[in-house]
Amino acid sequence: MKSVNDKIIYVGKAKSLKNRVRSYFSGKAGDRKTRELVKHIFDFDYIITSSEEQALILENTLIKKHRPKYNIMLKDDKRYPFLKLTMKEDFPRIFITREITPDGARYFGPYTDARSIRKILRMLEWIFPLRSCKRIIHCGDPQYQQSCMNYQLGKCMAPCVGYISCEDYQKIVNNVVKFLKGRNQEVIDDLKSEMEANSRELKYEKAAALRDKILYLQKLNRTKNIFFADLKDRDVLSVYTEDKRAAVAVLKVLAGKLINKEIYLLNQTDQSEHKEILTAFVKQYYAEKLDNLPSEIILEETVDDSDLLPDKMTKLFVVPQRGQYKALIMIARENAVNFLEEDKLKHLRKTNRSIFPVKELKDKLNLRCLPRKMICFDISNIQGSDTVASQVYFENGKPKKKFYRRYQIRTLSVQDDFAAMAEVITRFLKHLSEIEKPDLIVIDGGKGQLNAAMQVLKTSAESGFELISLAKRLEEIYLPGNPDPIILPRSSSALRLLISIRDEAHRFAISYHRQKRKSRTLTTELDGIKGIGEEVRFLLLKEFSSVANLKKAKPEDLIRVKGIGMITAKKILKELT
Image (cartoon, rainbow, N blue to C red):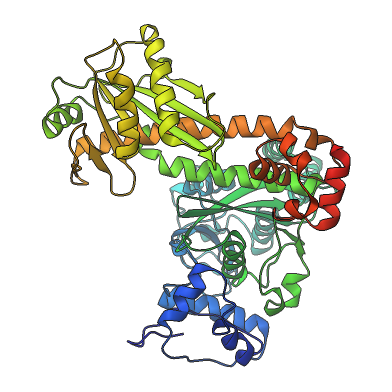
């Protein structure tokens, strides 16, 4: 689909082009993103393919090439490294690469953590010493008179000078492939046979070296959690979205063992629903893996347009509701959540903070004194449920966690951030003697939250506080009595300090809110109802606020909650009565 200036704004595929295009203009396009897309469509173009597989690959290629505005895309997918094994050479090499070319080589990955791939390569250099040099070496007579330093370090078997035959070298290559595919036990069995053969031939040094490698691999096997006894390969996918950002975690289960995780960031997801993001990722992630699919692909929900995907892919999809598969989905979700939070707050791990941003903050905001000690407050809730607040304390631009506090809002039953902020400031003042008095109080929010805090401070006997608020949208700073915000440049170290304090308060509040929410959903009467999962329990309590309100509801009220039909609604009400 193209815009008026002939720019490609969306790429898709369909079995029936007529029906698919007509659906965009039928008035039934429900989500915001599709409605926005339709406004900008000026022209169409299409390419005919002979199969769903070709369509999937072509769609993925065009998305990467044109990067259309209304397609969800993997972020910088070319940056992820692979391990490359050059199978077309007589003596294959193994090394790290970021480009995949159709040269007959085998690629293992991608590895989203560059440190893990380097660790694996170092491990391979010791257990399976394949060459990594660029020398051209063929089977037969030695092509070189002297080996390189890698042979002296034990990282290579020196095929360049004829120290190993093609046949023996190929055995090592086969074991490398098995190891990277998670078939460790087969590798151990092969090494045991080789060790016994060397022992019979009185080659005790070689046998001892093989024994050490076997012991290492056995130790490696024991440290991995076995999830499946059938020793099949599986992928487990989960999506997590927060603040217009999305991450997908892929757990790699190889030969029945969970041995790796991959985390991917996605672009252009702010107007997309959860299922749409999952569908876009599945199509792009597996488009280049159709010849190397796992035995099962475990998803947290069904994908859209599954009839347009290759049959050999769709028959692998599994959407679990409970049991071991569901446990894996939750592990993947936790990894995705952790990745987004760490990525968002990674600046908090920097160690180069100093007093200079604090000095700049005093000058830019015309504060009375140097704000060496600062407190920030943040409110967290979901539509008024489980409202909590956080208090973080920074001294000289660095967090001082012994003065961190958490608050459970007690006086509110509905969402009211202003009243919640007033309650938190009131309770803070009552316990002010427990901490070192701050020079500056930072409120996470706009003028409303700032005014609520000011009203409490005006009626308090405590004085001497300076107060500001930081609004998220444009990082505007509001001061008491000043209707216009102060906007500092993004390069300002003072603004970066305020953002880091605000983000830390947000992180602290969110973690407490999740803890309270999880505790509540796990200890209600809903917990005893068979077939009702954690997510459904949470959505019910979010909708009705309490089990008491839920008991008064009608089945028609319950079916408004996602994932609940009429039969399930009647069952829930029957169990609660």
